Image (cartoon, rainbow, N blue to C red; front, side, top):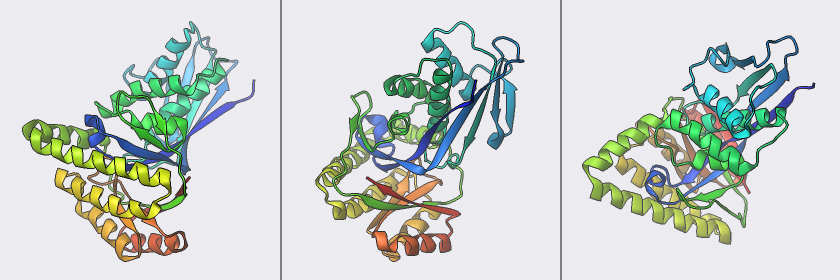
Length: 313
């Protein structure tokens, strides 16, 4: 039996970080320049039901049986098997690779889960629909992030820009005019769960203040949706700047992110903001397409360890 493969893209949150956890809208888009990939190869010589899991990027090689059931990869595999009601999986090896930066707000964990769930369900002869793939990946996201909003698994699964409100039906955005982003990575690992947890503590201590912050971010996301769907790309820059300002008040930016945001604006970006959980990870800049390379160089000069240019369409 030939090897079967599946992949899933990275993602960026354009608007709505943190507030999305508290029921406000957020907008996210896939980044296809980076991806997670999973390959399943049958192992005719293996013992019945033996599944080997290889993730060389994190130094993992193990049987499924030896993995902690709470390990995210084990949870993704077992969740798929349970969903398909399969009693015994043919002996196989699942190999996972990824070019998505880890702990950088680009949906690495969700993309890995989606790729694994897709490839395993296909290997077992019953490819799961997107809705089920996303739901299973969300359960794994709880292991990674504690109280995830669900936006990562949704945008990574559907690989389309989405407008997302926790607990409500997914809305795929129609992008009237394509726009260009330059993503700048601070190189600082920042697990989303830690940032989300700290914001929750602050919210519990000052609920009225933080609810006001979240309302402001939600209103920005609503305005951004209107701009994206009407082709008003020029309006997105100031909205990004405003969103970053509120995120700074919430306390999830850092000196390195602020430095890259300022560098992008000075180099000619129309707007810029942190992206994801904050405290490190990535920022995004809305740029004139003709100046993308120049702005990417400015970000590198300001300390970005890598840049990615992507078009949202």
